[in-house]
Amino acid sequence: MSSSKAPVERATALDAELFAIRLGVVKATFFDVKRIVIITDSLTAARRAVDTSVHSDQAHSLAIVQALRGFFTNHSDRSIHFWDCFSKAQWSLHFLAHEDATSTKIAARRYPATLLDALQSKSAVVCLDAWRTSFACPSSQGRYFLPLKGGIKNLLQPSYAKGGGWLPFIGKSVTLCARATRAILNHAPIGEFRQHFFPAECTQCPCGHCQVETCRHIFANCHRSAHFPLTDLVPTVKDFVKFLKEHPSAFAFSSQDRPSSEPPEPP
Image (cartoon, rainbow, N blue to C red):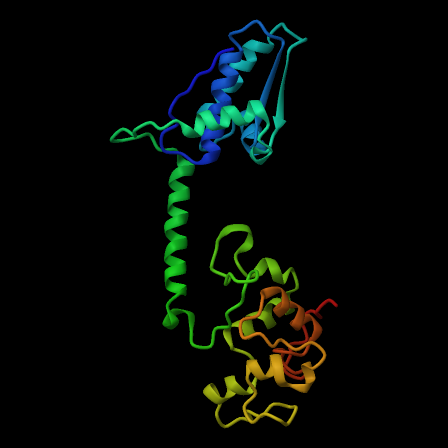
């Protein structure tokens, strides 16, 4: 048994994982073995290990492929296997290697080598921090912006990952997305909007019980939404989307105002 460690310098977790695979594969090919088993908690890194196309860790991939070419040449009985092992499982061999690698602290040199993914990740973090700082400011967010919770407590925040904070909950319906956007921004064909921008027009709710039709009234007090009201001051995004699906006319233009080309909303 043998081991080796080397600093990956300024890189992402994926970069570090691929570098570790490189160290292991290259070292293993120096031994007289027929089977190499790579145990990793990142299948993405495993796939990238043999991907020689242009990417942030291309140098690692090229080194791995070059080592494997010599390993397999004239040896049809040799093989390499990648095992997916979750870190949370704490499987003995993988856990020991993981703890050894993460507990090692090496002082960074003055000008460390920086991989492309690390630069992109840093740029994305800076951008996201700027978004969230701006979003926390009432003047940027808007006085009538509808806050929504992603879970029990956490408010939805701007994000670039996995489709953003709001859109993944809405789905692929164009009309549902349009109505959700109108409700969240309070730019909808309701009395409150008309009061601000078209004061000469009628602001009363069609139910006849509210002089100025507001989002809060539509959510909680209007008899048109009585079978599924949205009473929380800060509802969850799932309840909000369910409300819109339960009430297809909420925050929608009337039939005579709706363009004929607008697709019908799925049930």
